[in-house]
Image (cartoon, rainbow, N blue to C red; front, top):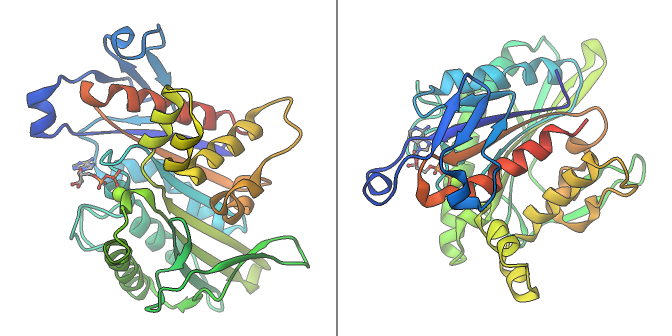
Length: 323
Ligand code: ADP
Ligand code: MG
């Protein structure tokens, strides 16, 4: 498996999208995505993008999961692994990662995260341990497993240079139902917290980390599952040349992630700017080295979102070049 596998999923169009726009995204074969009348929306000839897999609007949660499933084997063998969902607000990130709103994480429509956890636990043997932490990164880093909503600090571990989150709950979980129950509480808290802070939850990143320790084979690894903030502000800033004021409004962590990926794909860059944001610091061990990564880019099929779609697809294609 390549270092970064990039999968693309097209969300079904809503009735509003059908009334106001037309469908412009088509899947060709099972790996390529084509934008119809592309020149109209992006003013250039770029019209087709290839990924490791491309899923049309009728793909099931189980089909999308098939491409991501190998991650559990990597983690069980001791490789760090991360699954990211990227895309504009409403493009299907949370649906793909967790499932439809109010759906049980244990139901038939459950997303990638509960499926990964089931396979992960199925591969464990006696004596193995799983610890979970759930963080939300907005402007501050917050612990979704703790009622008390105080900001957390990131710190460098002097011994091995890894990044530690001071004071975050790191709960031992024994089985799949207990883990899903914990995640469900964290997801509810994510929404509640954004209301309390009068914030926009589409601007927050959700990072669940599962630290797997396997004494029997002397292996340990972290599996990170990341539902990223909506990418639309990043696209808008780039489209207008990115003045300072606009840059303040966009999600700086998401731009920093793009810059880290750009540096990791560049043949000339000598410095990877992990330290530029809390998100990239937190994910450093998941992005560099031997870590395995799956990136699910989510897009709408509608002409109304064509520009955002192009920007999302470009991000995905870029990430595919990380080795
Ligand atoms: P995001 O997290 O990217 O902002 P959501 O996952 O919340 O977007 O999706 C927006 C809406 O579209 C939700 O109501 C979600 O259930 C629905 N949706 C997204 N993807 C799909 C899909 N593949 N099939 C059916 N409904 C979907
Ligand atoms: Mg979401």
